[in-house]
Image (tube, rainbow, N blue to C red; front, top):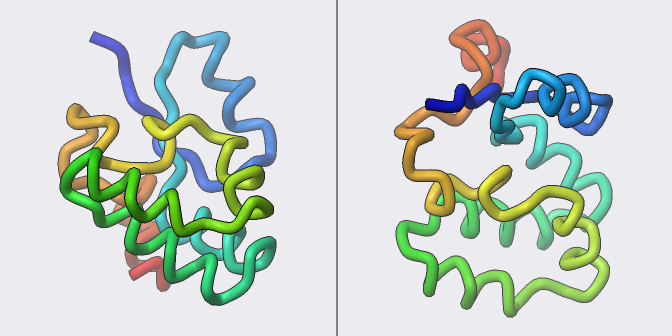
Length: 106
């Protein structure tokens, strides 16, 4: 079993977890803020829809609507690192900890 570490951003989280052989997953709140900052409010709405997709085909349809700029930005993470439908073992967790959820992430 590989552990999944829910990380909060692009500041070295991937490299820190690679050496431990952990899977990573970008928490919803921080990823959404980064997407909106780089791709605008419409990009944030598409990311939210993609994050909540319940089937791969639905995710693919949403990704098809993304601009080239957003597609390039989203490619910084694999689908399994940012969309729950692509990482079933994640379960229902969206945030790195209960503190993140309390911290206004929800």
